Structure formats: C-alpha cells, structure tokens
Image (cartoon, rainbow, N blue to C red; front, side, top):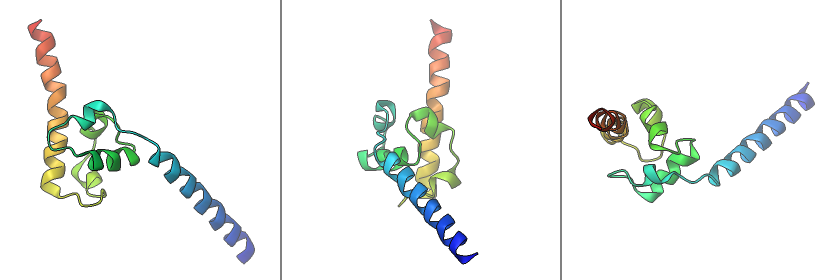
Length: 97
C-alpha cells in the first residue's frame, strides 16, 4: 500500500511540474499588457495562471486574483473592473456606428 501511495504521489508531482513548465512558456496577450496599471511582471504572473487576455481577466473574481503573488484586494478589483469596462465600451462603439 505504501509503495502504491508513493508511486501515485510521484506521478502527481511529475504532472504538476510538467503543467508549471508549460504555463511558464505562456505569454500574455497584447491587450492584457496594454492595460493601465499592468506591469509586464504581473501580466506574466497572470498568464502563468491561465489569465492570458483582458477578457480572461474580466472573468475573474477578486478572490481568484488574490492567489497571485503580491496582489492586493483593491488593486485586483480595479483591474477586473477595468477589464470589464472594455466589454461595455466596445458595445457602445458598435451602437454608435
């Protein structure tokens, strides 16, 4: 039983390492990089967590962003609202055209 547990744990650890290596290769989209207040470092941290585009960020909650190293609740909320604002701004421009 101990041997099976050890093997299972080794497999899980190997999978997690592989997943992290793949996420390290992910680059943030230009729209995320261009957001006001977004640093390249933060954009890469977000991309490493699967938040690659501005829309990906808009779909997050403050609690989810707090898992990012150094993220403060107020700043997380501001980023999310800024990302969501683009949804509404895009709609206004289409209506005006």
